[in-house]
Image (cartoon, rainbow, N blue to C red; front, side, top):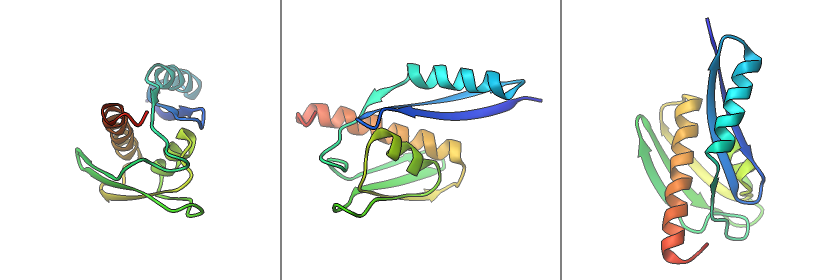
Length: 127
């Protein structure tokens, strides 16, 4: 028997990381997940309080549609997506999850979306 821990770390200023830790006890799983999340941190582009442009990504059974929202809207997303966007520093984002409701799959899909957004923003000169 082992435990799986999915952890998100961030500074609410554009840096976010995600890690999965598996171990026989919960404390070891938390330590592994924390270390992996800190190692995989990326910079994400934040335009005021939202994303700079809409994105749509399909990863495995998950399809995400991520759009910016006007000020005061908040984060409209479900499950793990909301936690990741909040820790990254976004305040006004709308996200629709199509496909699976598995939190780990959704978390990896939003992380992939943020990585792609970062690469595109660098090419466009937004960051």
